[in-house]
Length: 300
Image 1 (cartoon, rainbow, N blue to C red):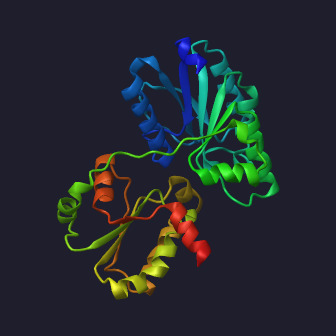
Image 2 (image 1 turned 60 degrees about the vertical axis):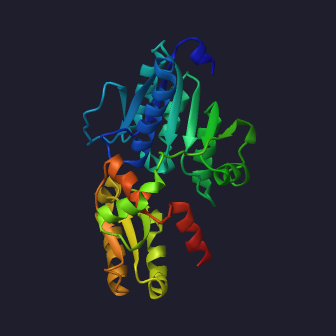
Image 3 (image 1 turned 135 degrees about the vertical axis):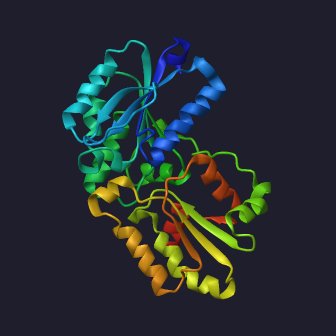
């Protein structure tokens, strides 16, 4: 990257802690990882995404705030960034729910106004897009100098279903924290699951997580393995709470009650500190992530 040779900064555009959001955690982890490896040679600042009614106390690394609900603010912030001679590169962390407009189309105003090199990281690439989603995603990609995806499937979808050029797409796997699996039994003892087979899912709850897929399958599993425990870890996504309250969580509880799974399903309704979350992952025998659950749902 030429901007590194000139000693310029990278600006990361994303939700950011203390906002409770998976992408906020990801971006904070990314900043810390880069700092640990490169130190001050790759300086990073944050442009934090937030809604009009939100108010957070950020760390000093947050130098810009983009109000995602006000369309005019996208151009205003882009122009502020353009005036910064010390910023050489902008990296946008993209999820559809983060940006305003149809399928996050307000982001286009930011990209059109920005005159810095930009890479956009697509954390989710959805199959079978309608015309509007396809148009928005393709335009975001065209206005970016580089597109980064986290999975091979996402790359294939961009090429085949969004008809986007492979030349600008770079696959960089998501990555994860180091987990010491040797501590599994001691952690099971600590959390009260010494003799259980533990399944787990974590993340902010929303309808697209397909957790009900596991709950529908669990009665047959419990018949053969009555000691199975399924941990559903995470609060309901704050944006979902604003729109529909705890509708999805209540749906999951109703399924648990219907199939009499109260002894086998535990809801941990909290946004856990990283250390505690990693302990839950370490004690899990099977971790079920969203893409696995989606495939199960399609197969069913």
